[in-house]
Length: 286
Length: 158
Image (tube, rainbow over the protein chains, first blue to last red):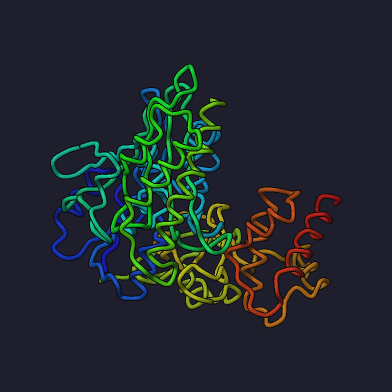
């Protein structure tokens, strides 16, 4: 197995595009090394992208943020501005694994690992984040909800890498939150995850919203009817009940050891309401 | 293909080694450098027995490749004691009987030291969350948490 650690995106893209056999991008490695150890993947080439500047930086750009795809969870948490502006995203990324995992795991890896239960992904989707994808044909910015197309399947072409995530400027009175449910308090994979981002107008009425659910379908979902349930409301009980129903209606979960279909559907509605409540409180304070 | 020649720093000492791409940092530490204090538990990042620091950051050495260690500063359990003088965390683990079989202990100590380096006065809750990625299957966690809090208290007083 070959190992390359290019210092530029161009070199990384060329290596991946020209690889004759299976090639993998190595960021934090917290999923990839486990998959290699268990022979789930047997790459001929590893391209370590951590030597590329854009992938390792958090920058304020165009009124928003550009977060390198290989920035670790621990580094996200230590960035004071990012944490105060987008607390839901930082909290979501920090739910992944242990302190040790946080030292290496990245949001780019979390997305590209292709798990429907990835914690940072619904938070990014709710926040209208875009993935800045670089490949042999140049750069394109893709809404995060369009990257994963199914378990372990991505819409990226051969040679394409997610270089960074773009978070838009945050409008006034906007708040976001991500919650996940697991049967214990740490070190588990989401039974359901839910990200909510909403904006209030000057009268306190919800003028924009995005709701994303994880672990309830083959890919993380952007649930437009759940957002529609909030828009125009003050998140009073009736609106929260509509949100709950819309979130449940969007679920197409599987039964597995972490939860049954019925349980996941029920929890999705509850988490959507709770995440919306936190997003509301954050919007009022922002 | 040829092995990778890697130059790194382990516990402050410059070190060079040869490894294959698939060799983890844990493999290198134990099998090439003879630093067998770092243990392999699960090998998949769940148990924390292989905890080390890389440039001060706590990681599982089973989830990092040896080739990634080039130019880094690695900290292992062997770097905790100064000669015959145990680190306060090591002393407090003994005093509180915070170990039985001992396989998880190096990982707990390295993780706890990383916590105290970042936060000299952690709450019990902060200790428990920080150490959630370190599994112990015999002692139970109370004695470990008490030992860490006691060591933190002593180190603040020192």
